[in-house]
Image 1: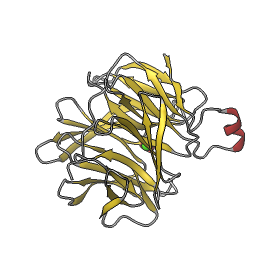
Image 2 (image 1 turned 90 degrees about the vertical axis):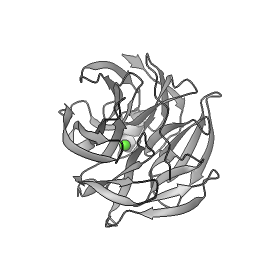
Image 3 (image 1 turned 180 degrees about the vertical axis):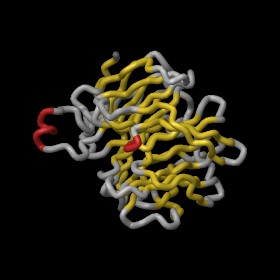
Image 4 (image 1 turned 30 degrees about the vertical axis):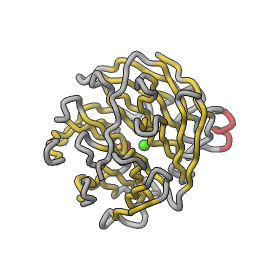
Length: 291
Ligand code: CA
């Protein structure tokens, strides 16, 4: 078991979506309810900037040419290097009661964008695929809280988390077309360790899964064996994790104050902080959105 340390006492309402941007040499993360995109300098250990938006920011992924692709409200937005929104891509049929939540870019530069109901309980979220030509298709329906997504080392499997299903599922993945098929459970949980949330896969093909409500991140082998636990002391709600730093050898973890009572917030000093842990693994370079 490894204890993560507070890298930045950010006090985020719903810290999420961390990703290492090789383009910027910075860690990028979002506060969904704070409607902000944050940048953190691994080298100095200090926050660099905060950019605000007019709606909830569900996730942020680096683009090939610089800037980010954001889940913004119930659409996808493309920003330039200065953070300004250059173009918006609608997610057709997505109800006003939903918002974007987590997303990931595949090794071919396609964006997979999840959504969920803002009130959580009414369901009806989806997973969309946004291709580099900005065409959109809904690829999974009936999702409760669309969350972590990543690919196996050979790109032939896509792992996917719907938090309230308490599972990590896998799909067969066709990297040439972006088609997913053959969804089946990979890891099944009983909720006693929290809800599986964000996820990243390291250079050994092992999954790192954040457990909201569980104060920790767990590492699993490709065979599903639990290999490591990284604890976030004083922060019950880890939401997402990624490897950062130029060597991709630091595990960053975002956390949330979301839905905590005043009493809980008094007791949990680090809720909403950005954490970093020294672990015996390295990450893979982030895939860049090609649109
Ligand atoms: Ca999440």
